Length: 562
Image (cartoon, rainbow, N blue to C red):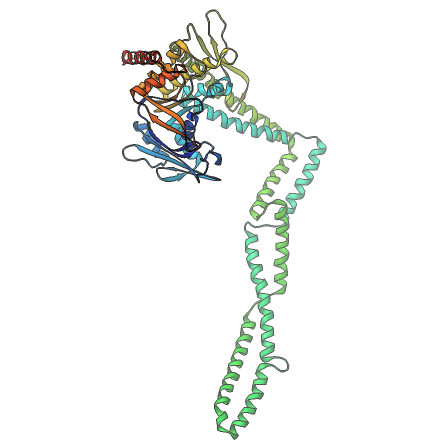
């Protein structure tokens, strides 16, 4: 369950922290007080899109932190299998820091992606927004709900249909691509043959371009080395006026002078060393140049080969592997075009086989859906009767179509008759907003029992109802709260009176700044808030007595059901 919610710098909330507990947690407040911000903050922490404008004015960032306690061992196992850090006592902390341009989500202190936290949220909490019941009007939603109820086998067959259908569509696309007249076939044959011949004629080896590029770079440097050594050799010991020759001339003159003046002898020795060093360097360079191999012809061949490969890579792919893959693909296409009639016949046979396979799975899925539709209809009907639908008839119709798609061949429609003698019609045609709310609550009740979801959040699921119906909804919410943690935002005093814990969301103005706060109410404060919800401009003693009586009735209802 969700144990704690901490929010900082989010919209009108400067900083708020609230501890929730098991059972029915009711949240109330004036219109515009910020109730949607509280539910929104939970959604943000669980991966909902968050723009920079949700950050409180003047703040650098917004922060939301959720602390869950997982009582069920099965839930703990699923969380660990997803590689999330779970405390030994079953506590899990999820936080999101929202900053302009980016946000950081952490689970157990480790940074995770939006996709990861959304997958995690699916096993932790079920959030029903204000307008979610409208999704009941969509056939795709009705189909998905039935499949969820049908369980793993339905999901397995549904996945098989999707896989086979994709392969079917690929075969169909391949057949469509080969649907051409003789003139078009000849043009395509000509182009394919040209491309295949060009690629195969190049004699390409995989990875060849990398080896050639490396070799070419070395050869480019080698040419520069040869040019440099030739110049060095010319300056040192080749041509007129080279360094070795002039040094020899200088040494002879200095030797003559040293014979006449002993002070010049050290200079003569140093110059002799220079002459010897220059001779050594000149000899080493000549030896290096003799051993150094550079072929202008090989360089030109390498350059031409690279030009060929680069030309092919611009046309067929940016590597030799991609060129060869493209060539192989075009070779197969050429073979198909040369034997087009047989290829088309083979594809049609494969399509027929694939269609038969899909229809077989679709029939199995249809039978399962039909059985589960009856079971789900009965369960929903039972809950709807508790929700003040007096003689309701609810049915899930599963119709098998001639065509099929990725979800099978079934069309699912939720049908309802609200009055005795009336024909069952699609929910979309007869249900009002309040009736849709109760149908969705019935679905949530059934699914909550089935998947053992620990925490459910309802954001004004009571829209469009009042009076006795509101009381029935409150009883259903209380019943749900016996086995689940329920967080419910409501405007109805009947539902608020049924609270195990009651929280007030209030908007205040301090020093010209508007702030939203949330706090748990004690028994006396809860009576006052229920009195306010009863709709009087002034909370008189009579209204307070009315609120107390409503809460007392709720308490008796709870005790009867224990």
